[in-house]
Amino acid sequence: MMKRLSSQYWFSRFLLVTLLALVMVALGVPVWMVLLVLALSMAALRLLVRSGRYAIRPENDLLPLRRDERGADINRRASTYGFVVVMVLLGAAILLYTIFSESPLARRITALDAMQLIIAAGLITRVLSEVVLRQRM
Amino acid sequence: MRDGDRLNNRLKELRARFDLTQEELAQRVGVTRQTIIAIEGKRYNPSALLALKIAGVFDLPLEEVFWLKDKGERSIS
Image (cartoon, rainbow over all chains, first blue to last red):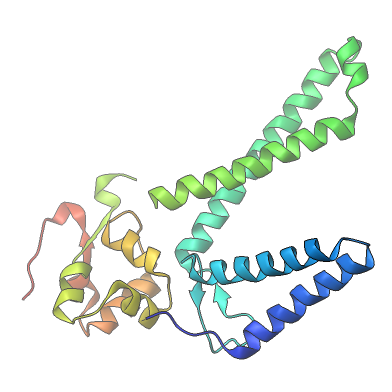
């Protein structure tokens, strides 16, 4: 049977989601959308508890969801893969820019554009690596 | 991972003997059910600490629960 989380946990998460809702209201987001986000956020939090990704330690009242050693291992490896992809792409981008700095394409692409793409590639690698590692480990 | 690097174990057998579900064993040693599934499926080698905790649940020495795969199968004594 799954361990039950304390009411303090759910109350604290409800407060956080409510705070998010208040910020959205202050920013002029329509009320129906705020309510939808509130409901989806609480559902996502519930799903997170049931996902099996985290070991539940009810004795840690406000932070009861903890990665176990396999989860931490997967997280570490996936982060490493993402970091390596970012570093390799960054190196390649610098090299290509140095070689083709006079080309029209190089003049059109800003450093910010390139960094956005490189970081996106790193994040995608990290997420995909985690999915694959969870299947294999 | 090379085959010789994999830890063999008899978790499934011991769980049945002690009438423990994967979830119950996971809770006793403070990990997720997925980790127990991965260990039982020999896809994940637990740390020494976790292996000792698991062996402790069954009140058995570590080597009665885990052993290197190339040393062959064992049976419960």
